[in-house]
Image 1 (cartoon, helix red, strand yellow):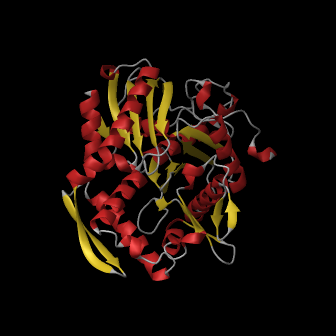
Image 2 (cartoon, one colour):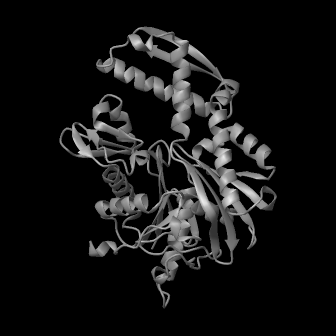
Image 3 (cartoon, helix red, strand yellow):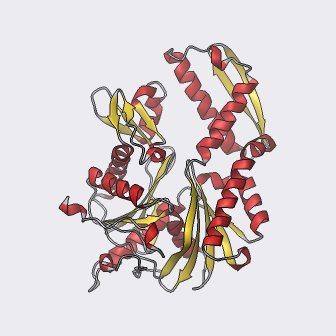
Length: 409
């Protein structure tokens, strides 16, 4: 028996498996555990996902979809090879591929699945997420949790957090930012106040800033290119990848050189960490203001915080810890697995539901708006409220609307 946690991110998707009291990151790709959140429709009307879709999408951009999590709720369809798809349909394809990959490696489907979502998603988007799960036809039961709660659960498994302690989660991922304040309870965590988020703030925006820096340095050479030429399309796609790698390298290096190999120019563009930080600083100040709003909503002051937990791949940028620590004056904990903390926490939550399955009263019977809990090895964590709910949060505004179980659909 095993439980599966899935973090379907804007740019990368991660998964984790819980078995026998231990959660570990699941390997989804060949180069890293997480895979790109990318779906491609081939000419034979079959789909590629993850690394394969990302590679092929460099030469077939009209058939590939990226960053579609940002489009959830947008009624404008996403065209793949001229065929319209909704964001939730593409999310379903990606979720199904993840579960199938894990089931193949593990020799069978998971006994429980927990899927995370941003804490500031309202009923409309969480209902669309439920629709995506239905379309994916995932093995039941499936439960849901907010991303900051999952991150806090995993943090509490690594560090001792006493009941009553208050933790702030600063989640800066590939495409979105989430801030939430949580209190440790005897059975897990509860969200205090209303989580805050910025729908369009994350690593892809920083990637775009680096690409624009290169474009300015090239003095108009990019505008001269033929956008319909396959060679040019591939070269520009490669340049964008070089910009992403340069941004990531600056988390440890103080300067990088970005190679530019285009049909009309071959050169290098230098970028320093100071230049990158100047580009992203205004957006990071916006994120700190969102965190402050979450604190005010929770009626919590910064000095009441046990710590601020930084999760999400973009939180690895040194300037993030520097700004958050300086602004709030509290200890900053940079998760050892910033890209995988949410998936690992979701796996722990799924394990709680797995343990509770044999209890006289199932977790899914918990009243709406109440904190449900389930004991797992290593300490109790909040359980998920079944296929139509989320892991225990304080306040019904953060929960998906009541809906029928998937088996009835």
